[in-house]
Image: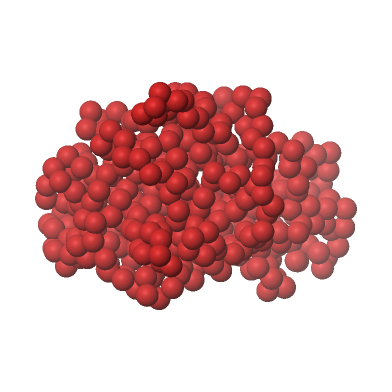
Length: 398
């Protein structure tokens, strides 16, 4: 790809010898100058790539070697495999025009200015507001219900794409999801895009006919390319316990200009952050497997009840899995009601009354559960989001 690749192979070999860890998805890092950055392929980092090609002095070679933060383990070229700690201002931006991939050719008109940068979380009222005021066909959501819900798209091969998980928009630039949704063992899989504003996967735009016979339609869905994902550093994909199963995804473009996309609130305030929510009725939604073991084309919802964690721990010990009440929570519903495959990364939502209005907070996130779903003996396990608020905020960039 680069004419100077051959003369830099030795430098890249020095990089490889520095760190043996394999990193599949991007993560936060600190460079040799103690500045915060993102661990990413050197081919995407202007400053370090130019240093390697044009200004490889002995001092710069040392800086480059110390900047390495991993190797993605893929069979790609060395310049794509070597991961370096890159500052946000040094990253490539040549593909900005293609960051937002609108379904079809219809653009969605932005109607409000961007007022909240990516490193800030919205306040209750600016987040957590579900616009729907209708009750529709039992467990099927309304077209504008839970407007923060996202679908995570991966690229599994040439021209092959697949929605593997859910997620939740938390501000203008970030989506919260599970660690196992973005850190997978298949090295040829690529995190590709996030879909927002979806309801029915088979049509676009989504429309309903109201009780007066009038047709109501939502704007077309928005597919936004993923910039990078940061997985909690303590998450171990092969672990049976799935501690720290949490990740944040940065979008390549802000969505602040789309008024129908409303983020969900995170439990930042201590009055909500440290609640256990035992016996509280909560909501979960997604396009995951149904009772027929097939994915749903339409966004579904279910009511669950948060379980008693000691009882939940007791049940999971019988299948040799240890749970931790600081990191995890349990929830289950009536027979046949549960989150399931494909719902991973979606939020466990609770309503709190804030300033005379009901506001949704993401207090848990779908992590794992029994197979098949909706077991009578084992509830679903959710990452307890309140435990990770500081980590989330520390990793948000403008």
